[in-house]
Amino acid sequence: PFEVLVIGGGPAGSAAAIYAARKGISTGIAAERFGGQVADTMGIENLISVPYTEGPKLVAAMEQHVKEYDVDIMNLQRAEKLIPASSRGGLHEVSLANGASLKARTLILSTGARWRQLGVPGEEEYRNKGVAYCPHCDGPLFKGKRVAVVGGGNSGVEAAIDLAGIVGHVTLLEFAAELKADEVLQKKLRSLKNVEILTSAQTTEVVGENGKVSGLNYKDRNSSEEHHVALEGVFIQIGLIPNTEWLKGSIELSQHGEIIVDERGETSIPGIFAAGDATTVPYKQIVISMGDGSKAALSAFDFLIRNSAD
Ligand code: FAD
Image (cartoon, rainbow, N blue to C red; front, side):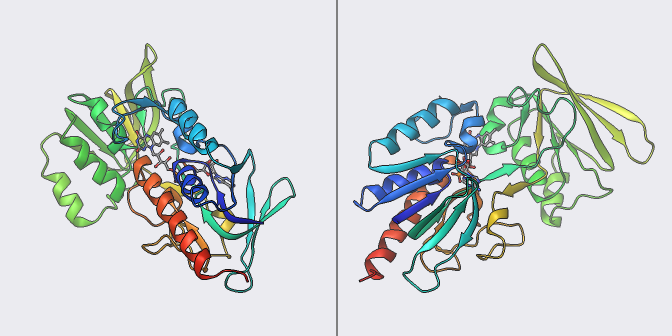
């Protein structure tokens, strides 16, 4: 068995594996796809001390850093079930899709999250070419330009307020007849001069020209009329889904499916820690996930020295 087994190989899992291995304890990392969301990212400009990098380059650097240590890397392994230890300090078990199972004294769950897709034509084609999901990451790329935010919940309205300070104009589209965001956010949004709010608006297509987004089509759900908005960017804000379906029933999750952690990264089960986008930790970012993974590994080490088997 491992002393520390990390599930997930994104920024959180990589950081956790490095911190654990540096304590000289047996460490494994199992990931469905090493690199996680970073592998799908183009330009990255907010990893502190690295003014610019690209997703695949950062993934290669993370993997190389993990390989500096004695870490058992199990790539292309999907965890399907968690069987927690029956007593404090006992062995937890994780079943993999390939039928094998792994045992460890502590676990660090860092299976990340995925953005909910709109599922309209053009969304996939123009991803990273005008279609974006993260305003903190990509907002500055649209400085002075016209963008849409799809989604009128808290994250959509927050994104629109944030973007309005950077871009030239924001069109917010909400499918329902009313915005769902908190009133205080809606009030702030309505006070902004360069924001237009469209409700009962069903986004039907992202359109592009020369390989880049050039506009968006939507249907007015009251009149059934089709409309076109010319713009350079579309931010889709209809939800971030944690990859925690496999944990349902075994550890405590929030109403949004996030793994509930305390300030040390510990979950509802002693010896099981979690880090990054899969957890209740606010703000889903690379640098935050890396810090979070390090913290979870230090907490796991602390747990091990206080709960030794013998
Ligand atoms: P992830 O990166 O989601 O990694 C999860 C890991 O768990 C993966 O290895 C995955 O394969 C694995 N996994 C999932 N389920 C299982 C399972 N059942 N069994 C085994 N393994 C599993 N952030 C920034 O800071 N700056 C940016 O510029 C930026 N741009 C972004 C652009 C895009 C297009 C996207 C999608 C995200 C962007 N982000 C950016 C957000 C950032 O990528 C995430 O916050 C960060 O990757 C989260 O790290 P994580 O390790 O928690 O999870």
